Amino acid sequence: MNRESRNLREEDLHAYVDGQLDAARQAEFEDWLAANPAERMRVENLQKQNAMLHALFDPVLNEPVPIAMQQKTPSRWKPFRTVSQLRFAAAAGWMVLGGAIGWAMHGKDATKSVAPLALAQQAAIAHVVYTPEVLHPVEVGAAQEAHLVKWLSKRLGADIKAPQLGTIGYELVGGRLLPSNSGPAAQFMYQDARGQRLTLYIRTDAREQHETAFRYAQEGKVGVFYWLDGSLGYALSGEMERQQLLLIAETVYHGLNP
Figure 1 (cartoon, rainbow, N blue to C red):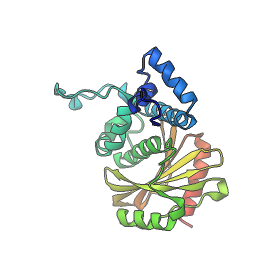
Figure 2: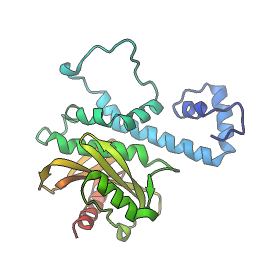
Figure 3: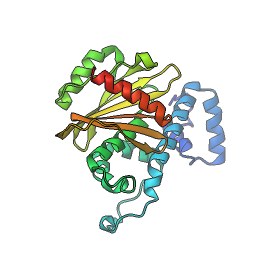
Figure 4: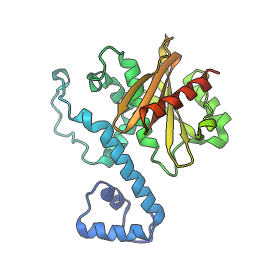
Protein backbone atom coordinates (compact mmCIF):
# COMPACT_ATOMS: atom_id res chain seq x y z
CA MET A 1 0.00 0.00 0.00
CA ASN A 2 1.12 3.56 -0.67
CA ARG A 3 2.51 4.96 2.56
CA GLU A 4 1.58 8.60 1.90
CA SER A 5 -0.96 8.44 4.75
CA ARG A 6 0.45 7.62 8.16
CA ASN A 7 -2.98 6.58 9.40
CA LEU A 8 -3.66 3.92 6.79
CA ARG A 9 -1.93 0.58 7.03
CA GLU A 10 -1.69 -2.62 4.99
CA GLU A 11 -3.87 -4.26 7.65
CA ASP A 12 -6.63 -1.77 6.85
CA LEU A 13 -6.71 -2.92 3.24
CA HIS A 14 -7.31 -6.54 4.20
CA ALA A 15 -9.75 -5.57 6.95
CA TYR A 16 -11.70 -3.50 4.41
CA VAL A 17 -11.78 -6.40 1.94
CA ASP A 18 -13.08 -8.69 4.70
CA GLY A 19 -15.66 -6.16 5.93
CA GLN A 20 -14.05 -5.71 9.33
CA LEU A 21 -13.54 -1.93 9.49
CA ASP A 22 -15.88 0.19 11.59
CA ALA A 23 -18.01 2.79 9.78
CA ALA A 24 -15.69 5.74 10.41
CA ARG A 25 -12.56 3.86 9.39
CA GLN A 26 -14.30 2.45 6.31
CA ALA A 27 -15.33 5.94 5.16
CA GLU A 28 -11.76 7.20 5.65
CA PHE A 29 -10.37 4.25 3.72
CA GLU A 30 -12.83 4.70 0.84
CA ASP A 31 -11.80 8.36 0.52
CA TRP A 32 -8.20 7.20 0.29
CA LEU A 33 -9.09 4.59 -2.35
CA ALA A 34 -10.86 7.25 -4.42
CA ALA A 35 -7.57 9.11 -4.64
CA ASN A 36 -5.51 5.99 -5.37
CA PRO A 37 -6.85 4.13 -8.45
CA ALA A 38 -4.12 1.48 -8.40
CA GLU A 39 -4.96 0.49 -4.83
CA ARG A 40 -8.68 0.57 -5.63
CA MET A 41 -8.05 -1.93 -8.45
CA ARG A 42 -6.07 -4.09 -6.03
CA VAL A 43 -8.97 -4.06 -3.55
CA GLU A 44 -11.47 -4.95 -6.28
CA ASN A 45 -9.36 -7.94 -7.31
CA LEU A 46 -9.05 -9.12 -3.72
CA GLN A 47 -12.83 -8.83 -3.32
CA LYS A 48 -13.30 -10.86 -6.49
CA GLN A 49 -10.91 -13.49 -5.15
CA ASN A 50 -12.83 -13.65 -1.87
CA ALA A 51 -16.09 -14.22 -3.74
CA MET A 52 -14.50 -17.00 -5.80
CA LEU A 53 -13.14 -18.70 -2.69
CA HIS A 54 -16.54 -18.54 -1.01
CA ALA A 55 -18.19 -20.03 -4.09
CA LEU A 56 -15.58 -22.78 -4.19
CA PHE A 57 -15.50 -23.79 -0.53
CA ASP A 58 -18.81 -22.80 1.09
CA PRO A 59 -20.74 -25.81 -0.30
CA VAL A 60 -18.14 -28.15 1.20
CA LEU A 61 -18.12 -26.32 4.53
CA ASN A 62 -21.88 -26.82 4.78
CA GLU A 63 -21.63 -30.60 4.39
CA PRO A 64 -21.66 -32.78 7.51
CA VAL A 65 -18.23 -34.02 8.54
CA PRO A 66 -17.96 -37.85 8.43
CA ILE A 67 -17.62 -39.48 11.83
CA ALA A 68 -14.22 -40.90 10.89
CA MET A 69 -12.91 -37.40 10.38
CA GLN A 70 -14.37 -35.92 13.56
CA GLN A 71 -11.58 -35.28 16.04
CA LYS A 72 -11.25 -32.96 18.96
CA THR A 73 -9.48 -29.78 18.01
CA PRO A 74 -6.73 -28.75 20.45
CA SER A 75 -7.69 -25.56 22.29
CA ARG A 76 -4.55 -23.84 21.06
CA TRP A 77 -5.77 -24.18 17.45
CA LYS A 78 -8.04 -21.41 16.28
CA PRO A 79 -10.15 -21.54 13.12
CA PHE A 80 -9.40 -19.21 10.24
CA ARG A 81 -11.64 -16.23 10.81
CA THR A 82 -11.13 -14.14 7.71
CA VAL A 83 -11.17 -14.80 4.02
CA SER A 84 -7.72 -13.23 3.75
CA GLN A 85 -6.43 -15.99 6.00
CA LEU A 86 -8.35 -18.55 3.93
CA ARG A 87 -6.61 -17.26 0.81
CA PHE A 88 -3.19 -18.08 2.20
CA ALA A 89 -4.41 -21.35 3.69
CA ALA A 90 -5.67 -22.42 0.27
CA ALA A 91 -2.33 -21.68 -1.34
CA ALA A 92 -0.36 -23.42 1.42
CA GLY A 93 -2.64 -26.40 2.02
CA TRP A 94 -2.42 -28.27 -1.30
CA MET A 95 -1.35 -31.56 0.21
CA VAL A 96 -4.08 -31.58 2.87
CA LEU A 97 -6.78 -30.57 0.42
CA GLY A 98 -5.70 -33.20 -2.07
CA GLY A 99 -5.94 -35.90 0.57
CA ALA A 100 -9.46 -34.82 1.51
CA ILE A 101 -10.90 -34.80 -1.99
CA GLY A 102 -12.44 -38.24 -1.67
CA TRP A 103 -14.76 -36.85 1.00
CA ALA A 104 -15.21 -33.32 -0.31
CA MET A 105 -16.53 -34.52 -3.66
CA HIS A 106 -18.18 -37.74 -2.55
CA GLY A 107 -21.63 -36.64 -3.64
CA LYS A 108 -20.70 -35.72 -7.19
CA ASP A 109 -19.92 -39.08 -8.77
CA ALA A 110 -18.87 -42.00 -6.59
CA THR A 111 -17.98 -44.10 -9.64
CA LYS A 112 -15.03 -41.91 -10.57
CA SER A 113 -11.62 -42.43 -9.05
CA VAL A 114 -10.30 -40.03 -6.44
CA ALA A 115 -7.19 -39.12 -8.45
CA PRO A 116 -8.99 -37.38 -11.37
CA LEU A 117 -11.31 -35.58 -8.96
CA ALA A 118 -8.32 -34.37 -6.97
CA LEU A 119 -6.88 -33.07 -10.24
CA ALA A 120 -10.00 -31.00 -10.93
CA GLN A 121 -10.18 -29.67 -7.38
CA GLN A 122 -6.54 -28.63 -7.24
CA ALA A 123 -6.83 -26.97 -10.65
CA ALA A 124 -9.87 -24.98 -9.49
CA ILE A 125 -8.06 -23.84 -6.33
CA ALA A 126 -5.03 -22.71 -8.33
CA HIS A 127 -7.31 -20.87 -10.75
CA VAL A 128 -9.10 -19.05 -7.93
CA VAL A 129 -5.88 -18.09 -6.15
CA TYR A 130 -3.90 -16.73 -9.11
CA THR A 131 -6.26 -15.39 -11.80
CA PRO A 132 -7.28 -12.25 -9.84
CA GLU A 133 -3.63 -11.19 -9.45
CA VAL A 134 -2.76 -7.99 -11.31
CA LEU A 135 0.98 -7.55 -10.72
CA HIS A 136 2.14 -11.16 -10.27
CA PRO A 137 -0.29 -13.59 -11.93
CA VAL A 138 2.61 -15.80 -13.12
CA GLU A 139 6.20 -16.59 -12.12
CA VAL A 140 7.58 -16.52 -15.68
CA GLY A 141 5.99 -14.40 -18.40
CA ALA A 142 5.15 -15.33 -21.98
CA ALA A 143 8.21 -13.43 -23.22
CA GLN A 144 10.29 -16.29 -21.79
CA GLU A 145 8.02 -19.08 -23.01
CA ALA A 146 10.83 -21.39 -24.15
CA HIS A 147 12.56 -21.12 -20.78
CA LEU A 148 9.24 -21.57 -18.96
CA VAL A 149 8.34 -24.77 -20.80
CA LYS A 150 11.85 -26.21 -20.40
CA TRP A 151 11.92 -25.39 -16.68
CA LEU A 152 8.47 -26.87 -15.96
CA SER A 153 9.21 -29.96 -18.05
CA LYS A 154 12.37 -30.57 -16.03
CA ARG A 155 10.57 -30.13 -12.72
CA LEU A 156 7.67 -32.42 -13.69
CA GLY A 157 9.99 -34.98 -15.29
CA ALA A 158 7.96 -35.01 -18.50
CA ASP A 159 7.79 -33.07 -21.75
CA ILE A 160 4.97 -30.56 -21.41
CA LYS A 161 3.69 -27.92 -23.83
CA ALA A 162 1.99 -24.55 -23.60
CA PRO A 163 -0.64 -24.89 -26.33
CA GLN A 164 -1.18 -21.88 -28.59
CA LEU A 165 -4.72 -20.48 -28.34
CA GLY A 166 -4.35 -17.35 -30.45
CA THR A 167 -6.81 -18.66 -33.04
CA ILE A 168 -9.59 -18.53 -30.45
CA GLY A 169 -8.55 -15.20 -28.98
CA TYR A 170 -6.44 -16.22 -25.98
CA GLU A 171 -2.79 -15.32 -25.54
CA LEU A 172 -0.35 -16.88 -23.11
CA VAL A 173 0.29 -14.73 -20.01
CA GLY A 174 2.91 -17.11 -18.58
CA GLY A 175 3.08 -19.87 -16.05
CA ARG A 176 4.25 -21.06 -12.68
CA LEU A 177 5.34 -24.13 -10.72
CA LEU A 178 2.91 -25.44 -8.09
CA PRO A 179 2.79 -28.31 -5.60
CA SER A 180 0.17 -31.05 -5.77
CA ASN A 181 -0.62 -34.17 -3.81
CA SER A 182 1.35 -36.20 -6.38
CA GLY A 183 4.41 -33.96 -6.72
CA PRO A 184 5.17 -30.84 -8.79
CA ALA A 185 2.47 -29.36 -10.99
CA ALA A 186 2.46 -26.63 -13.64
CA GLN A 187 -0.02 -23.88 -14.42
CA PHE A 188 -0.23 -21.96 -17.69
CA MET A 189 -2.40 -18.84 -17.73
CA TYR A 190 -4.12 -17.34 -20.79
CA GLN A 191 -6.04 -14.11 -21.30
CA ASP A 192 -8.28 -12.68 -24.01
CA ALA A 193 -8.70 -9.06 -25.12
CA ARG A 194 -11.37 -8.45 -22.46
CA GLY A 195 -9.14 -9.69 -19.65
CA GLN A 196 -10.96 -13.02 -19.27
CA ARG A 197 -8.49 -15.58 -17.94
CA LEU A 198 -8.14 -19.34 -18.35
CA THR A 199 -5.68 -21.66 -16.65
CA LEU A 200 -4.30 -25.00 -17.77
CA TYR A 201 -3.12 -27.11 -14.83
CA ILE A 202 -0.80 -30.05 -15.50
CA ARG A 203 0.49 -32.66 -13.09
CA THR A 204 2.14 -36.05 -13.35
CA ASP A 205 0.47 -39.27 -12.29
CA ALA A 206 2.43 -42.33 -11.15
CA ARG A 207 0.12 -44.61 -13.13
CA GLU A 208 0.03 -44.59 -16.89
CA GLN A 209 -3.45 -43.55 -18.05
CA HIS A 210 -4.80 -44.07 -21.54
CA GLU A 211 -8.33 -42.76 -20.99
CA THR A 212 -8.35 -39.34 -22.65
CA ALA A 213 -12.10 -38.64 -22.40
CA PHE A 214 -13.02 -35.23 -21.02
CA ARG A 215 -14.75 -34.99 -17.66
CA TYR A 216 -16.38 -31.92 -16.19
CA ALA A 217 -16.58 -30.49 -12.69
CA GLN A 218 -18.24 -27.30 -11.50
CA GLU A 219 -16.57 -25.67 -8.48
CA GLY A 220 -18.58 -22.59 -7.58
CA LYS A 221 -18.32 -20.27 -10.59
CA VAL A 222 -15.29 -22.13 -11.94
CA GLY A 223 -15.85 -24.80 -14.57
CA VAL A 224 -13.13 -27.44 -15.07
CA PHE A 225 -12.67 -29.85 -17.97
CA TYR A 226 -10.06 -32.45 -17.06
CA TRP A 227 -8.56 -35.52 -18.64
CA LEU A 228 -5.70 -38.00 -18.30
CA ASP A 229 -3.20 -38.75 -21.05
CA GLY A 230 -0.31 -41.11 -20.45
CA SER A 231 1.55 -40.03 -17.33
CA LEU A 232 0.02 -36.54 -17.29
CA GLY A 233 -3.24 -35.12 -16.02
CA TYR A 234 -4.64 -31.91 -17.51
CA ALA A 235 -7.33 -29.56 -16.21
CA LEU A 236 -8.62 -26.44 -17.99
CA SER A 237 -10.40 -23.97 -15.69
CA GLY A 238 -12.46 -20.88 -16.48
CA GLU A 239 -15.47 -18.85 -15.43
CA MET A 240 -17.75 -19.39 -18.42
CA GLU A 241 -20.53 -21.57 -19.78
CA ARG A 242 -19.77 -25.28 -20.01
CA GLN A 243 -20.16 -25.49 -23.79
CA GLN A 244 -17.81 -22.55 -24.37
CA LEU A 245 -15.19 -24.06 -22.06
CA LEU A 246 -15.56 -27.41 -23.84
CA LEU A 247 -14.74 -25.83 -27.21
CA ILE A 248 -11.60 -24.30 -25.71
CA ALA A 249 -10.68 -27.61 -24.06
CA GLU A 250 -10.89 -29.32 -27.45
CA THR A 251 -8.55 -26.69 -28.91
CA VAL A 252 -6.15 -27.22 -26.01
CA TYR A 253 -6.24 -30.99 -26.50
CA HIS A 254 -5.47 -30.73 -30.23
CA GLY A 255 -2.68 -28.27 -29.45
CA LEU A 256 -1.13 -30.81 -27.10
CA ASN A 257 -1.66 -33.68 -29.55
CA PRO A 258 -1.15 -32.25 -33.07
